[in-house]
Image (cartoon, rainbow, N blue to C red):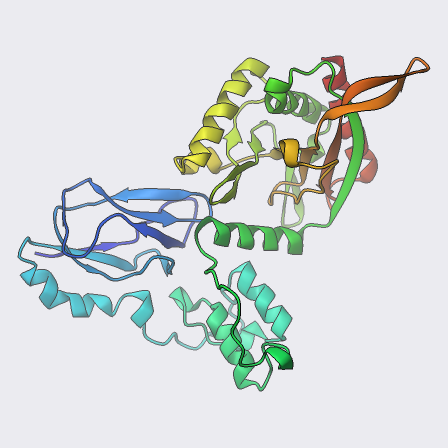
Length: 373
């Protein structure tokens, strides 16, 4: 009998996922537990093995489509495919592309929409509460919003561009889609302020720069718990663990794996973990657990960083520290002008939670620890 494989519950309260890449083709034989599909969530890309053996008779959700947990993704049948072929049309009715129209939203019910869709609705002046969602569980999609704008007589483009299609269009999907939604939420919800000061890195081994900064931040956060926190509703939650995220640039976009226990481990141990996580990130092999639960984030743009950056807070955290480009610069020491390896430390913080004076004191504490070595 045919096996209808549905998008499983991947944990962490996730209700949907994007089919990032199929690892099989229709008509291909697959063994049980062989790689079947890669699914992108807002945490990580997860490779899912096949729960059954047989011939892949129908792939019902295309790459780049976002579907709800429980949606049938693929039908795996007997080798001759006879059972699967006869049952596939009924299965396909469950697929997102052919889903029946969503029922009208009950009065007062919350609108289900991603941050990106909410931004588009705001830009086009569309009331999301008045739009019937066609996505999973009545979720309002970008197409729904643009369709509502068009039906309302609104122009989606400037007159000079109306009806003109130009440029190369790249679908917003995979890691880039997750980044867009995450950054949009951070920009909408966080009240950011950035504090900047220079730091003399002469006593820091630059080959272990990130690990050394992680250690200094974790130790300073003990003294400034409001920066190692989250804002949940009307409560500030100060965390008693120091699991710091490290921003890593990959070919797919920016990801933030988590280095655990930065307060209780040596710089050498942290450096080994940073290198391992960075390599896994670039190879696309990070596990969901390695991307969860950070309490504060450190980012370094290295040689491409310019003098300084104004980083975006990694929501739901309340602060992030960035390291600018370190280079020999003239500074005054004991009345003499000397060359020292100087870089800018910038801290962006959520002003709803952290006062400017406390953020500055935290930054100076981190700098003191780095300069003392």
